[in-house]
Image 1 (cartoon, rainbow, N blue to C red):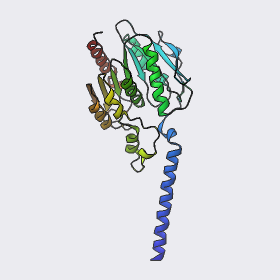
Image 2 (spheres, helix red, strand yellow):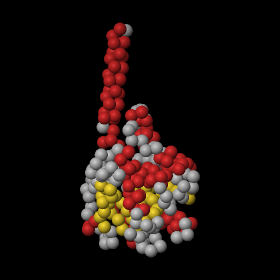
Image 3 (tube, rainbow, N blue to C red):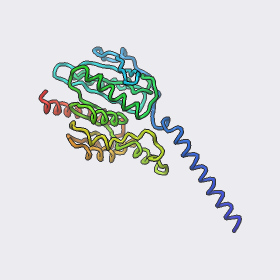
Image 4 (cartoon, rainbow, N blue to C red):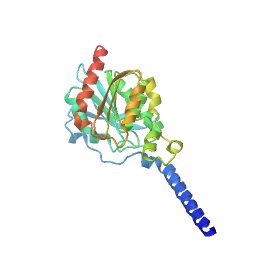
Length: 273
């Protein structure tokens, strides 16, 4: 029996040490696990965006963000696009081409720490970048509607809670990043370890703009329950689209732009524009 107890004790000690090692690894390298910062940059000249220009957006602490900007046609708003958590904003040029093709303006950019913009990527910096981009766009003197995708839904909601836009469109949004982490790693105390949590469920309560949420039931990155729950917290609900079996990056190919455009048209009409 003593031998059995020693074996069991040894197994427990090894398991505890292994688990502790996992916690330490997660804590030390969490931002490498949380963000997908690497990726190629598509040159503006390689797109069909003949009316757009590469721009530099200054932040309040002396950093500069790389972006693309195109002014809207008369009677159309500017779409301030907060990109998701993968590579450079430039690889989504198909979206910007669709916006411009319908007369919408757009501003898209890389948060610092992503390929186009130097600097350290943290929640504090990303949120500061979100406001810097909004203020830059506001300086153009045109109506603004906001589009936030995935990670960018947090940036978009934060900006909308602190600035005034005409509408807020959220694609595959979340409640907070700790909840995402817990969904993927239920055996880890993610909420206690995570630096950058983006509590979007708090910010949405201060958003006065009409809110539209788009999500898919097949999303394996951010479960659809999070998008549904976030929408229920929005003070000014304008619509929700739940696409059956759609994954995290499937909505655009399933007619998302038509739905978003209809939402923006309705929001602008409500503003008398």
